[in-house]
Length: 152
Image 1: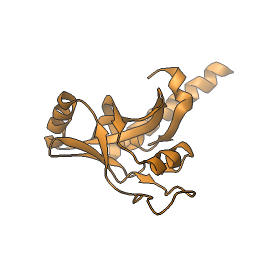
Image 2: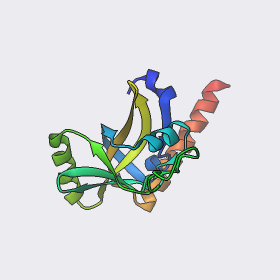
Image 3: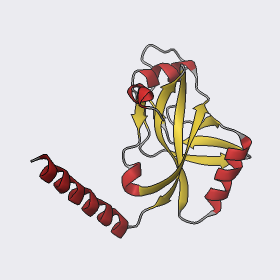
Image 4: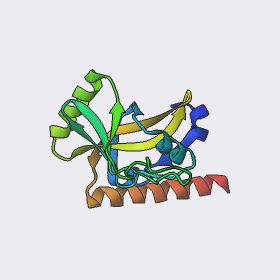
């Protein structure tokens, strides 16, 4: 993704890098209602516990929380409803094979604006074990010390 779109990010899953090894990334459109779009544009969205599920050859984001729009009416949608992702069938089939492998999952990494449309970046991820998390933290600390030493 280009640096130009970095300013248009509405939500990030910050824990994804800590909890998973991120392997392949995909871009997907999202089927949203009007009030959901307005809530996302105001930043009222949370990806923390969200994951993707494939049902009958279609891919959905589950557990993505979009707060109801304050100026909305009775047609506000359920904040935790399943939202369909728009992807090519070949990509969905490829991701469906990933779901069968033990330890792998598909999670959304961020929501952003691209050419006036709200898109989701999803990734094929493998869960980290406790010792993997510790190694990542040690490496991050070492890199930080090296950067500080080079700065001074």
